Picture (cartoon, rainbow, N blue to C red):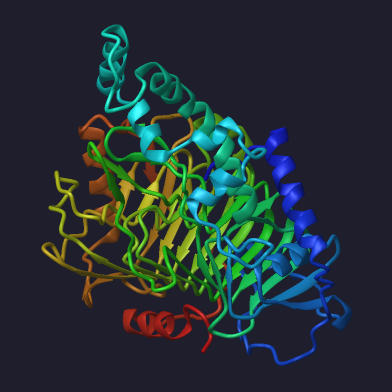
Length: 489
């Protein structure tokens, strides 16, 4: 997740979109019709979240992007039911914007920024290519049939144009929630497709019974050639948010649930247009993420900002991750920094074609649980399912990163003996998940990626608390998660 820019241009675009929607005279109507039967109640760190009002005067149903934008902006407690699929790129006139439309919508007619082109932008980053253009200028000859001087000027503007056109897309696909809101799918057909739900400095939110598909970033910024990209949008992004419950949702790259391969653009860029599915930072606190399906995504849950943001997160960032089905999630299930994280009773299913202990490979799956700076992680009652070339390898359950502060180490508590459920891999008991974690730490210390003593395995200072179900064995966990996770049908 990246912070949304708050520059004047972005604010102007957002305001224009709101005005355009208001011009359509939506006038939300109160809703008192049938509602889904959702049996769960808040628990864990978000146990005090109450969501929005259920008074009939503050309950609405929305069916398109304009209605959703109007409803989430209401400044009082409310419950919003989502009917059907809402497209984030739906313009006020009902048409669906494409990437070129965001370029054309930016600025005034004839604006120079309309000269932005993503492929041209990538070429402008290629020093060898630019030098060929400059040589054509020096030789006073055209370049690829174009005026070389004019083309070099266009290349020079691409990097400046990119954030400007990107702001136009962000204003279209970003939906900012306000305090005391429940956002709930009316039935199993409810979906937010290509929408970034943005929770910034808000409190008391329920997000339930929805399929959540993040926007594909039309204008991501590259970090390193050929495959490290800084896409902007999450399905749900929390910044300094508190008391947030996300339950019975399905988070994935597209409505079909299939994994989206990176775009390949000459001369070999692998463009990943997705960021996270559920990313939280800057002192976000008291969050429960429960009974969700996280499906076929690269970097799924990032809980905690980078080292520079540590002071905002320390002492906050309390998360309960319970009863979720991580199916084909390649990494960050979750990645955890600077907070307290209870990883209870989840099912992890992955295709593992990587050799043990992070050998070189190009397979998608990387790891499940990322133990990072100063995190306090409690793990219990989880089930692992794995197939592929290395179906029984346990070395990718954990990874360790940025763990280099001996005075404030990460702490990990593995509960795997009765009354807790012993962990299993493909139905077979893992002899010692504690030892798997210890071996992971040793590997990263030996490889120079972590400092001896920067991760401590201990249950001292960790406490149990009541969760919705106590399990008898791993099969009980598996059946519970498979029946309870995802949208209610």
